[in-house]
Structure formats: C-alpha cells, structure tokens
Amino acid sequence: MAKNSFKKRIVCIGAGYVGGPTMTVIANKCLDYKVTVVDKSRERIDAWNSGNLPIYEPGLKERVLKARGRNLFFSHDLDKEIDAADIVFVSVNTPTKTFGEGAGKASDLQYIEQTARRIKECSRSDKIVVEKSTIPVRSAETLERILHSGNNSVRFEVLSNPEFLAEGSAIRDMENPDRILIGSKETPSGIKARGELVKMYQRWVPKEKILTANLWSSELSKLISNAFLAQRISSINSISAICEATEANVAEVAYAVGKDSRIGEKFLRAGVGFGGSCFRKDILSLVYLCQHYNLNEAAEYWAQVVSMNDYQMERFVKRILRAMFNTLVDKKIAVLGFAFKADTGDTRDAPAIYICKRLLQEKANLCITDPQALKNARADLQGVEGRIDFAADPYEAAKKAHAIAILTEWEDFRRLDYKRIYKNMEKPAFIFDGRNILDHAALYKIGFNVYPIGKPDMDHFSDRSFFG
Image 1 (cartoon, helix red, strand yellow):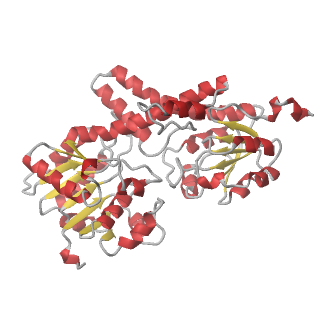
Image 2: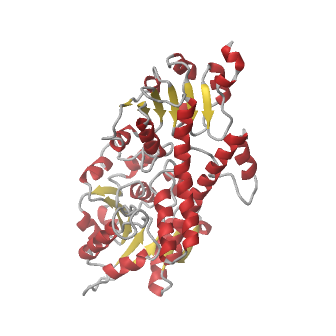
C-alpha cells in the first residue's frame, strides 16, 4: 500500500510493554492504517527496529517482522508523527510517586502532563487522544484542560481505552480479548470519536465484546480490575499459610473453591506473591483515592492486599531459613527465575527482587538463572551487597548449591533433569518451590528435601528411615 493511501494514521506515544504489542496487533489487523510508535528513548526505538526487540512476548517478534516497514513503524521523530496522526494513543509510564503529596501511593502523572503538552504543541489538526496508560480516575479532565488551554483552535476528543493485557500472553489477549472497553464523554463529539475506535476494533473483535462507558467508569474499571486480581492472589496466599500449618494442600483447596461458579478458578494459584508494573501500583493508587475521599475503612481494606503480598514474600524467606538449620551463611542458593511471571523478561516489582535481597542479608551466596530476565536481574540487584552470580544454564546455577528456590513458573524448569541436578548439589539438598510447578513426590524420591507453597513439607529429617 502506498504511503499516502492509508485510511487512518495512528501514533502511539510510549514503546513499552503496552504500546509495542498493542500497536503491533493493530497494524496486523488493520492493513489500511499507518501505525507508528514513538518514544523519547532512542535506544528503545532502535531496538524495535532491530532483530533484538526490547521486550519478550510469545508471538510478538513474528508479528513485528511481518508488519514493520509495511504499515508499522518505530520512529524517533515524535513531533512529526504526532502532527500527522488522526488518533494518538498515550501509553507512557505512570509510576507511583516517590515524593511530595501522596508519596508511596498516588500515581506520578508528570509524564502524562508532559505528553499532553507535547501533543498540544505539535498538533495543527483535530485529533482523538486515547488514554492507554493505567491512570487515576478523572485524569482525562487533566488532559483536556492542558490540550485546550490557551488560544488553541485545534480540538481534541479524549477517550479512555484501558489495556487488559497480561504479560506473557499479551498478543493472545489483544487478538482474542475478553472485552474491549472504550470510555468517552456522553456528548455528540465524544460519542462520534468513540465510534471511530469501535470501528477499528471491530476489524477483529466481535461487537458484543466491545463495551462502551463514560470516561470516569472506563478509567476506574482498569484500576478495579487489577485490584480484584491482586486481591485474589493475596487471598489464596493467605490460605497457603493456613494450609502449611494444618497440613492441608492449597492446590486441592483452590481446586474445590474454584469449582464454585460464583468464584471461578483463575488467580487461585498460591505462590511467592504478585509482581509486575500494575498490581502494587494500582492498589496503592486505589488506597490513595479512598483516602482522598475520606473513605478510610475502604483504604485500609485495600492496603491489606499489599500487606499480605509482602507477608507472603517474607514468609517464604523465613521458611528457607528455618528449613536450612537457621543459617544461610556461605550457603549457595540457586534462584530459578527472576521475572515476575513466566513468558516475559519483565522484573518490575518482581518478588524475586525482595527475596534475593533478603537472602543476601542472611549472607547466602546466590546464583540466578532466568530464560529472559538476566539483564534486568543484574540491573535490579546492582550495588546490593553480597555474592551474586548469574548463569544462563540452570544446571550450572545449581552446581554445588545447597538449595534451589523456584521464583518464576517457567515451563523450562518443569523439564529439567532433577536427578542430574541433585547429583551435583551439596547434601542435604533442598528445593523450595515458590510456584508449585514441580512433581514434589518425584523430587522427594530423588532425595530432595521438598518445601512447596501451601502444602505439607516433604523432608527426610522427619522420616526416621532417613537416619537408618
């Protein structure tokens, strides 16, 4: 298709975990749309234009290579691409504030404001501006005030189109979504702009899966979805502690509970805690929102979800310490997995960061392996005191180790030869399965002392036959 014959021109500001995959799918589904991703980071854009993409997602690279140069472009020229666009997606970072009012809870909107000012300065024609970042409710109001400030004849219609992608399945989630949510003002111009986005998504999403709402409902829905998912994880992790104390099996409890159609089975897998860029940040943002409106009891309720997550990580560390005779000094622990979940290299707020730092405080020696996240792991632990090694090969990481701690549910770790690993470890050999992904009975037969999450321990020290 000739460059001048595109039906629509889309630009996405932000080439991260949301912007890159989302625009890649749109480009593959809407061949008559020109889709351009821009970012202030030249290094990131260069990576998107190379064979070594800056993020890992199953199926992403194949789709980028298929569309790149045809109707998908990654550009350094923010001003030119913003001016040429009909629709501008805003997908910039909205971290938790680390300073001033709301520090530690409220979202830092400086990048949203900077982006709005950039859009205003660069635009010579009317545009639809789409919030794609996770932002506090009523942020669209801020965007509109900035975009329409001063003597500006250009008109902008702000929409909310939150992403509901899960890292590790982002492409699948975008191509076959549970729902697409589009929020707008209930004005003729707002409804018309919303219709443009509806038409785009209808290229591949069934009409009944495209939901429309007012702006504030759409913004809040994203925040609440993440809060509910994190709440379920913290809930099942609290039950895992009860299971360990009573010798119940958390997997069996979760299976029975999940069969209740009112509850369902998703997000009922116990582990070392949730991580990623959204859950903690969004719950703290919700806590701050509740406090802002003097809903203190509601704020305390949601704050407990984060507290339970922190408790679960600390509980895992203490379990390792108790099992290994209350000392980790100079003991090698092989850490299998550093990403916050499988099928991604993202380590933002990964439980592994906290757990590794705590193990190092106990003077353990760590060797970390992960299929995609070693570069980020090095950055996350840079400057942390203690001995930390990194190994691409899990067998090398586990060699001469006293214990293995599984912190990410990579499928690769299920397929390892644990007989070979056990043979090359120090004895007694411990394995702490923080994701409950392994065959614990088989590991016990090999000779491991096995410590799952929310299940009875399988250690030879409680078995009299172990002592002959």
